[in-house]
Length: 60
Image (cartoon, helix red, strand yellow):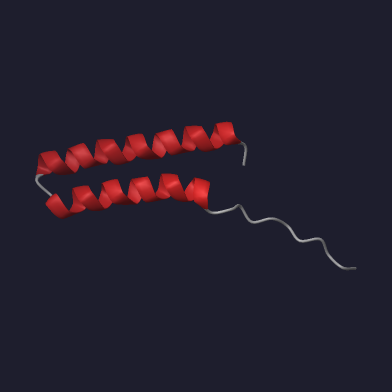
């Protein structure tokens, strides 16, 4: 995946996690706000850490 697409997807993921964190904080859900924030950060980082699967050349 091209880097510019990774950057955009990472920014959108973190923004959605931050907005959801704020909403959950406003509603008083202590566990859920930390879970959502942690999951959003993990998702953004995993996009950069884990390699994209590649097609194997067939031996035919």
